[in-house]
Image (cartoon, rainbow, N blue to C red; front, side):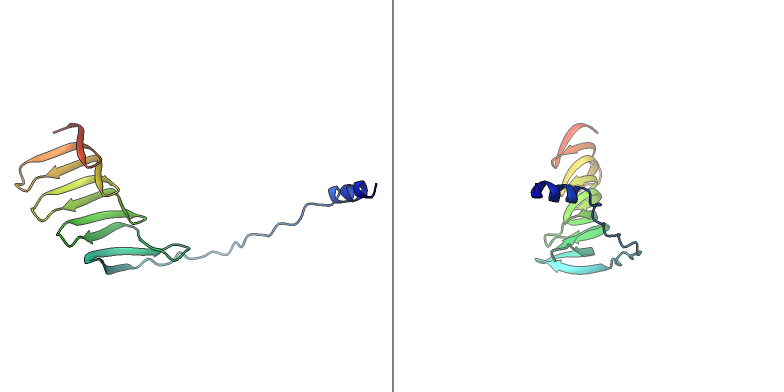
Length: 133
């Protein structure tokens, strides 16, 4: 009987109060463009830090140059090349289009070193795929 009384007493109690969320407006941190080197490769763009202190590349108009001369201009998402960007190689060839994980993937235009030979169309996993010309 005593246990039943305690249960009934708890059931009749109002629900616990919930904390009110702080509605104070916070300003987003200013993102600064930085230039830094990673293993002799050059990066210019936004460098962010996650809640655990890990740094990663992020932004919509970043630049990355590998020590072998390959250059990239475009977005980074969590340190991955992803989105619409431009790759150029030291031999003069270039690609402009969609990229995922650093590979040509989706719609894009490749121009060979001679400047005349071109392929415009679909790409998948870094290779020509489907219809193109």
